Image (tube, rainbow, N blue to C red; front, side, top):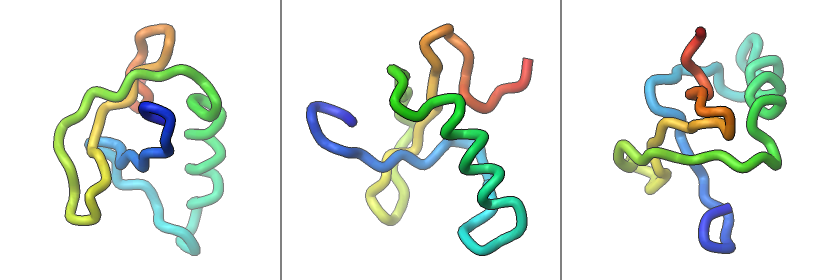
Length: 69
């Protein structure tokens, strides 16, 4: 949610499997476990051809959602 409305965000630098591809459900569940219904910060990098925001997603503890540490 951004300013009271849903906003689709495409994760910067991530090539996750699309629906119906192998491991797509596991990728979605992993991401949801880290960020769903939690406060995060999206650092916008641009927009794609579908007008989705491309962003880094920073978790409340300061970690980037997809940078392994």
